[in-house]
Length: 176
Image (cartoon, rainbow, N blue to C red; front, side):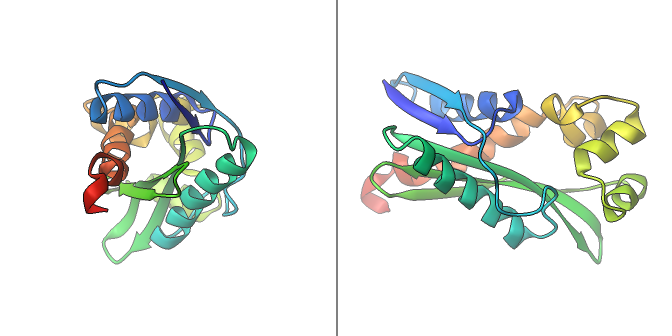
């Protein structure tokens, strides 16, 4: 059994990590748990680079907190204002006890201006979503992607593919 520590206690990130590992390594069993560690970046990362940095810091700090496991996972969601509008995405970083690191990124989509403006005013994306949609703590449920797609894509699904992409180097050890 492989032990995996996710640098979050958010149930969406835990479930997405477990599903990603199970899909990539269907013959393995995983003991997965979440821990709280700071990202080292603002609560709402505002660039692609800052979001990747946050995911990397989370995986690294989880490995320092729980050094005797097989894998550590850092997931960080972020936004970036572009000429086309405010886009949102997440980075996933997986680190193994051998020192190997994998990275994967979700797809991106653009936020409605009403939500983007609240984020520009200093609100985290989840808080802005809750205000616009009259919800509470949607970031631990379906998230912006679920709210905007009317649950065609749930936040868990959004992250699972990025977890799988981050696991490519571990699935193809001889190539990486």
